[in-house]
Length: 180
Image (cartoon, rainbow, N blue to C red; front, top):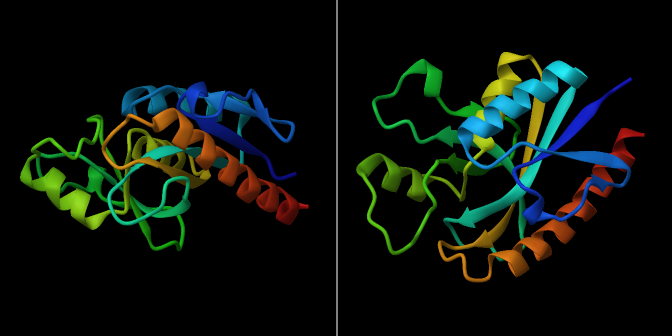
């Protein structure tokens, strides 16, 4: 039987304990928390698939609340390009996700690599790369769904996250029906 886990960084993105009867596991904000807790959940439940969902910052012209299924996820490792930090392909979607431990702020100045990634990718988050990396290491497939909650300003984040979550619920409901 096909099994999956739903993982989200924080309950503040959705305020629910489950989605259509499937528990939502909170893995924490940031790359380290996400990696550790995703690994622990995989060890405990042994899923076939992990679905991560949550809010993200907009780097292109996506609308607030728009849900993107991520195709490629990039890490913010600044040293040099090494195999341990190469982009990870998670689906055939054209959308790129840049994962960093720095909150994206349109008023800030960033280094060359960070700026390059903000131009290359569609959205930015703080957990996606780590989740994909752990899933790959454990031979578990993964889907990353990110909804646009801000464009570098967090003033309306909570209201925008609620819109995105409602949109994700509709997508997840369709996904569940396809699994039957």
